[in-house]
Length: 365
Image (cartoon, rainbow, N blue to C red; front, side, top):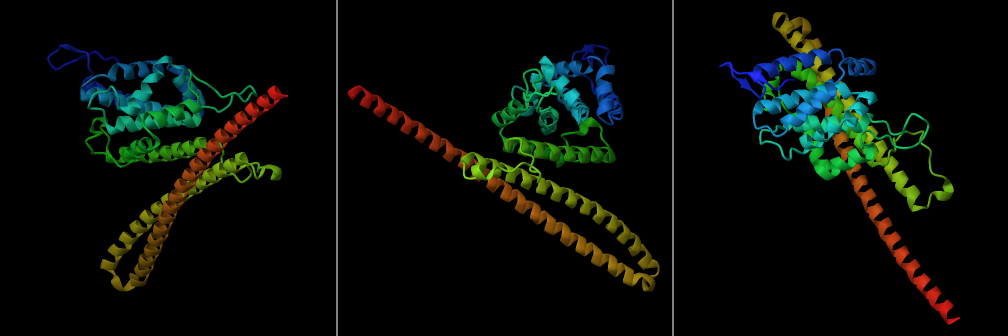
């Protein structure tokens, strides 16, 4: 991670060269192969010592640089941190406890950074903060219900940072922008990814985006998971505004869970469709060689493919419908909260007037 490199003419340069970035990309990629589960991630944290602190310091140093190579280096480091934090609360706590973790929101917003800041670096920074929101423990392990804080960060402050710094809509768009990139796009050519390698990364990235989206919905719904075994509100409290608001949040969480289930089903059917298309191509080649022997089998495969496409299309429409319903429910919840706030203000004003009348009566008596 040293920023002092040697140029072709032998002079020292304070910015990383393309060769050093390629070398670093390969080295961190090799380290990622050892990050298989939570145990190996915690072991990496102990073995490498100050590696995480060094990465964050390097990100701070590169934030204001104008060279494209500096942004390329930031993308490589952010990608490694995302893989390292995946499914490991210990690493997340270590990351947020660092005094240099304040550089992450700057990469997410792109403010005070050079014009070369790419959508890839913003998307990776958004994903990293989303993973910290997901894997930062909600409560401490000592049995108390106090929220866990790491370096002043907690779930509430991370969510508030996302909504206030870039807005939830922009945040989600920056997450999705990385999925739409290709291995040869201008945004990520510096990562020297081949098609197979990038497709593997994009598949992992997309699965993490789904995790972050589900986490955001859960946190915005007040931590309600949407499971069927959640405790229902008592009958005597069913008419109160608080219980109604809780039920609405539970509905939002349940709909989010249903959308996630539909997404997984669509992905599974898409893979099945690819397998069927491969078989179809094989049968097509056989048709050319012996058309009379396989016509019926070929027609059967064509019919199967058509049915799968219809099923995928139906599920996609259902996902879109569920997402629209989820957004509508969220807006209704926001309106309900606003009405409750207005009712509370009105009640406070009425209480103040009654107190004044009571004081006046007491004075007269």
